[in-house]
Image (cartoon, rainbow, N blue to C red; front, side, top):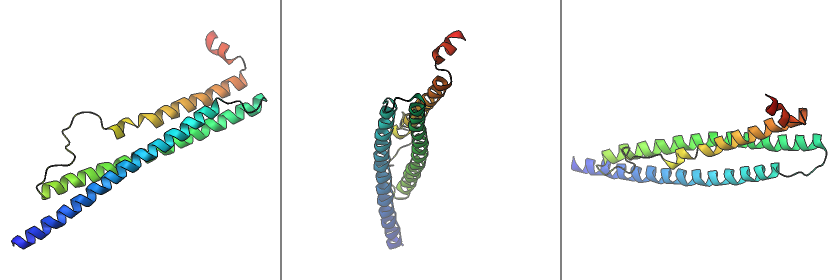
Length: 155
């Protein structure tokens, strides 16, 4: 009977290491993806500030397209961030369950206080969605109402 328990415990320990490794790998990939999206969206925001053409219609189209691409990428980033967060949460729960079976300390105690950084990072794609949406709205307003600032001052 003891050999079966030792074998089961050994299998659980290997599973625990595998789950822990997968969680750490997903967390690393999560931060790498965040860095890539942040750089690309920052470049799109910088591209928005450029004026490559002098024609107002072409410039408006250019800025709306740049902003639309940014909003689209921000939404994709948000969805990828959500899925990655689900994987990380799953692996943490699995590791905690296996640590109970192997009678080892929990790797990821739930009673720790504070906000997890991966959850705080949700603010970044949301901020880009809001910022780039405002860029689109401002371009539309100033295209149809060239003195658009007066439109807001009168109201």
